[in-house]
Image (cartoon, rainbow, N blue to C red; front, side, top):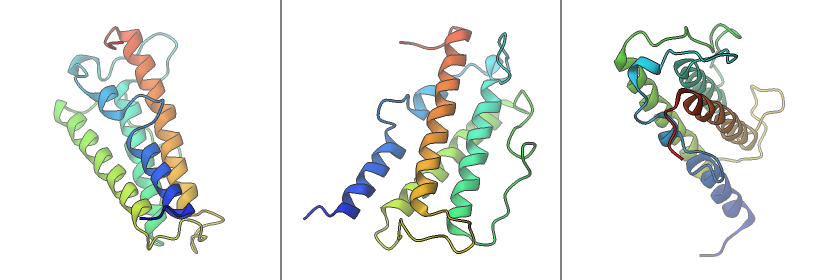
Length: 160
């Protein structure tokens, strides 16, 4: 099968969304996070692991829904994107992780679908394209995964 520029771009985007390239992987950054440390702040950092995880989930969901639904309404900024410091219960972490992964797969499917015009302006936006939104998801996730890894290091729970 011949590689076209469009197919190559989709492959590169999927690699960035799935694998992270040079970045930590979501699964590595969230796996085996001790329940008692999920809401723990460390000196000079304004966030907890729970706050980062939920912020990533909410932002990614918002970008995905904006990309595929003209009727989508984004949460209020910043209150709708940042949760309280600690998860309400132990199960909330797992639920958030699964939801994040589900939405990431949906974004990957949107990018992989050859019927998706990556360059077409979203009629309900103000200059956004699916390409731009997919890159935003990858960039936003990488940024906050770095913060999550830093937090894990400071808490002493990151294995090199």
